[in-house]
Length: 150
Image (cartoon, rainbow, N blue to C red; front, side, top):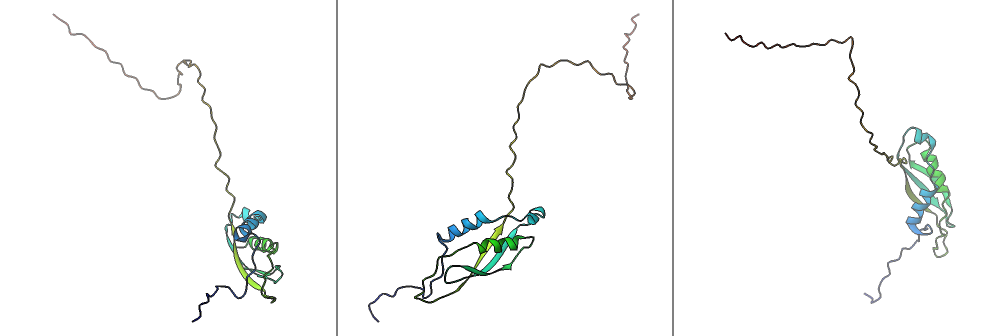
């Protein structure tokens, strides 16, 4: 064995999105427009997309491998087509890379409405008792008689 340390290098470099995966997710979230048809039908889900990145960083051959329909698949393809990757440096070789990603479609939920209320007190005025007419009412009369003493 030689005393040289082996370097863990990949032979073929994959194209990278400028800024990394966090920037890629941010770009997708910023440019994604929820389709009206999906909003009307209350559709949510994940679209899986496969695409090829050319040696110059251009995105080509975009396909929704698993979709949810209602315009979401087309929107995912549109957003992926906007991506531009950094060109991969592969020792002078022109290499095309196939990549996969998923795009989540979640309905925007409106925040719970905030209820504002005020309590005001009024001086209570006594209302006269209402007479009810035409309803059945029952009454009792109790009389007490004193016993005669005699």
